[in-house]
Image (tube, rainbow, N blue to C red; front, side, top):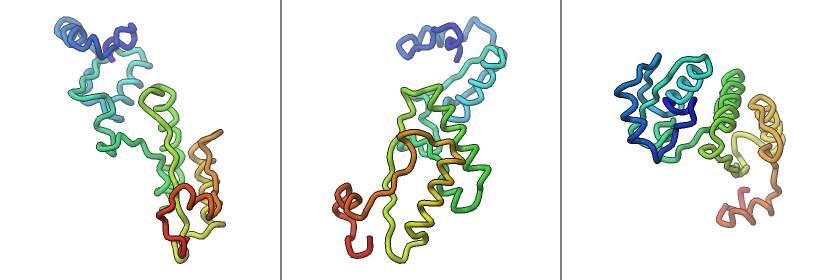
Amino acid sequence: MAGLKHNKFNALKREEIKNSFKTKEFDLVIIGGGITGAGIALDAANRGLSVALIEKQDYAAGTSSRSTKLIHGGLRYLKQLEVKLVSDVGKERAIAYKNAPHLVVPEKMLLPLIKGGSLGKFSTNIALWFYDKLAGVTGKDKRKMLSKAETLAKEPLLRNDIL
């Protein structure tokens, strides 16, 4: 973040930025540019502190789902009735998307409903509606319930007999 405030932050200028660390004094030095380090750096910079953020890999390489760089929405927490956590995760995801739209790409997820599953169509629809409200999901990112035929058209290898 050393150069972010002064529009110097650029992967192509990595060596130049690293060299500036030798002569500049910072209010805060953060090691690790994952979601936690980046969030702390952003908060500190917004408070007027001069911040150096040091990351050995690509930024966000250390997010909670390292292999996919996934910033999940916390849907599983809703099932555990962690209502405040779902709301907080949704807000944080929205902030990450706003601040780094080149790194945060919304992805659709297909959640097939099966006979004998833990939730039926009605309860899943209510739960996902509630999730959208809590997490602040808007527009085209909101849930969409598909028919059995639409689901099989998207994923033809799903078991038709239990879908």
